[in-house]
Image (tube, rainbow, N blue to C red; front, side, top):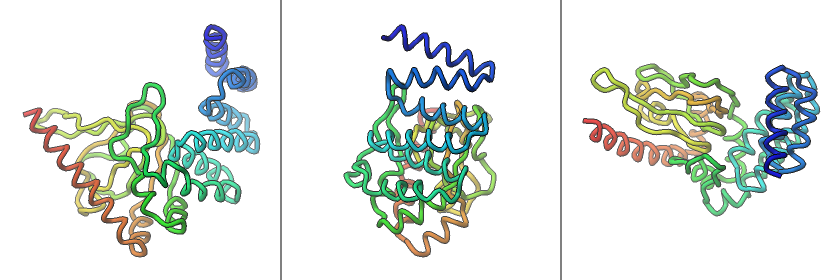
Length: 260
C-alpha cells in the first residue's frame, strides 16, 4: 500500500510539473481513495481552478473543509470556506458551514488544533479568541477575513513599516525575525492557526519584526479598518489581543537575551 501510494504521488507530481491538470486529477482521485487526506482534495481544487472548472473546484474545497472540520482543524476549514467565497462570494452554503465552526469541539472546549505530520504546535493560536466570541461576533469576525496564498520567501510584514492588519497562518510556516547589531535574530517560527500582527495594531507603532514565509503559505488577514470597526462592538477582543501582545513581548525579550 505504501509503495502504491508513493508511486501515485510521484505520478501526480509528474503531471503537475507538466501542467497536465486532467491526468493529475485522475491520479489524485486514486490517491484520495487510498487515504482520505483533505490536502489531496485541496490540490484537486487547485488543479480544477487551473482548468477553469470553478463549480468542481468549489466542490473539492468544500469536501476538504468538511474533513478538516471533522478532525478539529477549525482554522484550515475556515480557510477553505474563505477560498470558496473568494471564488463565489454568494455561495451561501460556505457561509452557513463557516458559521457552524463556532460550535466545533476545538472552539467550544478551547482545544488547540491538532497538528499534521511535520508540524509543530502553534504558539499563539487564534482559537482562544474564537472561543470568547458569541455566534454573531464569530460570524462578523470571520466574514471580515480575507484569504491569501503567498509564495515562499514573501515578507508578509516588514520591521519598521506602518500597517496594522492582523494575520492567521492556515497552511505552511512563517519566520518572525528582527534585526540586532545589523544581524537577523529569529524570534519564532509560526505554524497553522498561529496569530500575528497584533502588536502594531495595539500600539499604533511601526512593525516590530519582519514576518516572512518559509514555504508557500495560506494566510487569513483582517485589515486594520475592519478590526477597528469590529472592536467598537466587541471591546474584549482587544483584551485578548493584548494578552497575546504581552506574551509576545516576554518571548522576544528572552530571545534577545539569548542572542546577546
